[in-house]
Length: 171
Image (cartoon, rainbow, N blue to C red):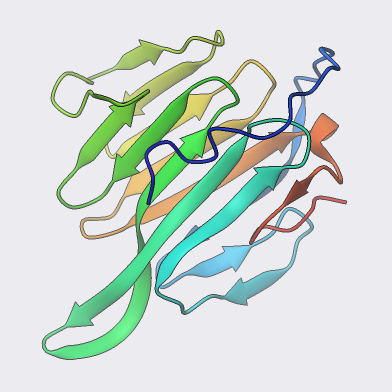
């Protein structure tokens, strides 16, 4: 998983911002996925995947899924790391060992409550949860579950039909 995830793509010339969010999707456990459009499915795969990617700007979310073993048997896959491009900042979060990077800078040991992001957004920590907000009304919540991560991504209404990935196109 590249900490520089989706560090490219076309720029959006429309600077208008709709800061309301009605589309939420995410994954938990041995990936149970729910999409922006309300569908549910299980995604038992190992590898690195695009969860959500904008078709108009740099916004994206990627996940690494690895085998989760109980004893010596391969049982399921779980999300173990996330790379999130807010549009201006790149956040990397890994479950075990815990690693947190903001724009390639390791903040794993110094990040205790909050970090201001370059786009006016904020990254906050509350117990085992990290939340990341950007200035366009999008929000990512990541929960540490020991060996793996659960996540919820809420996107602003202005992203309807302008995203792709495992969480659907929010149409």
